Length: 324
View 1 (cartoon, helix red, strand yellow):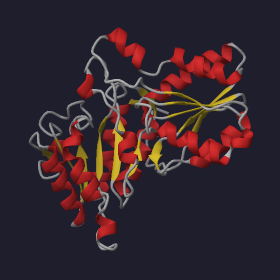
View 2 (view 1 turned 180 degrees about the vertical axis):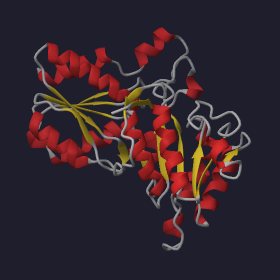
View 3 (view 1 turned 180 degrees about the horizontal axis):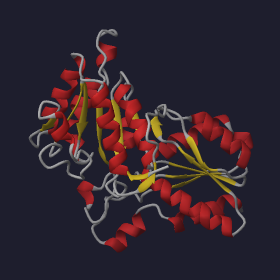
View 4 (view 1 turned 120 degrees about the vertical axis):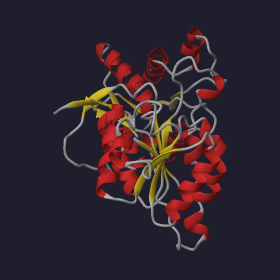
């Protein structure tokens, strides 16, 4: 099977869906003439023209609202944010418009729209450009939130997101766009809300998603050297969450560590920890451990970034704690 970059997998998903369905279009900052801020949409303007690959002003509130209106009138927009940090300018449109329209209209209007772009830390971008909002959006009924960890999942999940009749928040990472992985040539879809066991194990369950899954996988490899078998569960979507996959894994391993980039309060890991203690308490041989970012804005200095973000060392420490 061929290997392509994460950005290429996303591009293929969008291109294939735009060829299949004339109602699909892409809009956002620098998506057309510049070929995308991260070159995800490279070449798409040449194929589909300026009516379907649309450069917008730096006005997220405005073009998010335009996309929602277009979706309510039968189109299927893909709205790219240069970073989800900038989506805060548009959050009123997303939460009070897209997410609630089906409910408020008594089922008369659905909003088939995808909001996509990078989330979280991407190096020395400091406090205002390094935040994670997966748990913010996952808190809102009416939205689906997808956070893939590799090119294969990214393509299959993005196609499913574009075809979904509900608004989808599709979160990527600047640090993953160049990652390579196997991706099939033909069409395939990955259902939203289904987790994936990236590594089977028997002694402890590591749950993660998005680019931080790399931390969990690296920790699992280190643990194997010490004779500890870690099962790694990739959530892939954080609304809906595949609770069953997590609970079944914990029933097998009896220990759980959740690794997540977001701040600790009211995080996805908080939700999973609650659910597991509620539905698998008798299977737990140790208290659940979480590895999250420290409860601080992200600094600029690389040495401090390393201290604040989840890493392999902290994950190993958490596993050792539950193994005692």
